[in-house]
Image: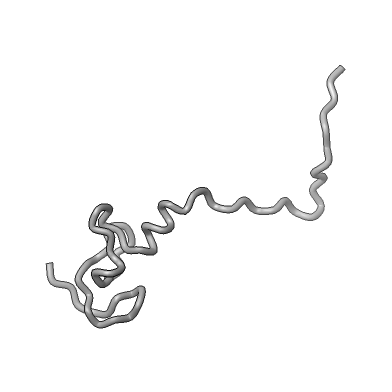
Length: 68
């Protein structure tokens, strides 16, 4: 398939692939043939869990339940 435009990662004018996940147009350097994903999606997918949000300031994080 022919694609036109610039790589959405490095902005080079040589675009050869479209990411199967996000649809970004990317050059050979920023495309993973194995997954069909751009380098940004590959990083997101293998980056592990998302960081947890900190609890709101008014939340009592020292609450303990004691059972007798």
